[in-house]
Image (tube, rainbow, N blue to C red; front, side, top):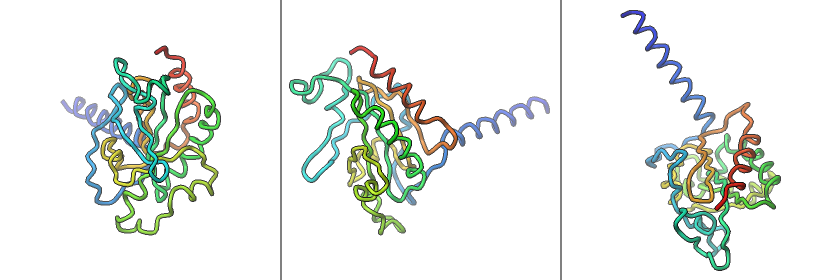
Length: 208
């Protein structure tokens, strides 16, 4: 019995360490009431419409939609695209570590049939104590050389749907609106660029 208890304890510790490694280095919004739906590979990516310029909106379903459905603008834009979607805020230090790696992958694939978007929740969290003076995302990222298109989730709607209460939160979505990769936090020492590139190559090659 003592041996059994010992092995259970070891397994629990190992499981706990695995979770810690999976989450990585994260930033958390204090007193955030967002309920994380626990999106995972195989789940349908929640739909969204987000502003990228005053009065101009980008839609998830412009690029990816379920297999038996048509894209939002299928007459003018009939091609399905996989998508890399990362939630961030300018106050998020782990995000600033992840973004240069995402930028490198974006530069390698920006002329390929894959979409990259950064979802900014800075404005949605600006009223939280300590975040009132957070810099605005556009100029802040431009100064850092980040050129990935930014979508502004000012009301936190996409943040709620994707459960992005810890940052960064990265999703890779295939041509059929299915999540193929879901990552929390920045993982120091991991080959994020290589892993993302391999997955993107696989998704681009998938037949519609």
